[in-house]
Structure formats: C-alpha cells, structure tokens
Image: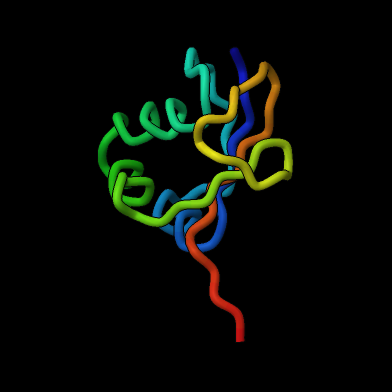
Length: 83
C-alpha cells in the first residue's frame, strides 16, 4: 500500500527530507517505523527504538499499534518542549 510520510524538526534535518511517498506492507504505525529503521543509516539513528518519537496518523497523534490504512499521511515528530 502507499502512504505519505512527513518528518518534522530534528528528524527532518537528520534525514535531509521533509516528506516522502512509501510503498509498504506494514500493518501498523509501529511496523512502518521498523521498516524505516531497517533502511539503516540516518533512518536507523533518527527513528531508533529507545528514542522518544511521536507518530501522527492523518494529523491525529496515535499509538504505534494503530492500523495503517492505504493512502494515510503519517508524521514522525521528536519530543517538543515549550517555553
């Protein structure tokens, strides 16, 4: 299935891209994250397990157990602090 991924803040900087279209067989947001980590390099570092990364599904913050539908927009965010 095809999904659109958006990367924000330090993740966007680490990957040198703000978005990409991906063809995936991942059934959940967590499985999609694991597929991206498996690419290695900057993806493995920026999205590594153990790092606090928030995920949005169609512009709604979601748990990684959420089902990933065809055509979804997925956003990956680092932790954000306010001031």
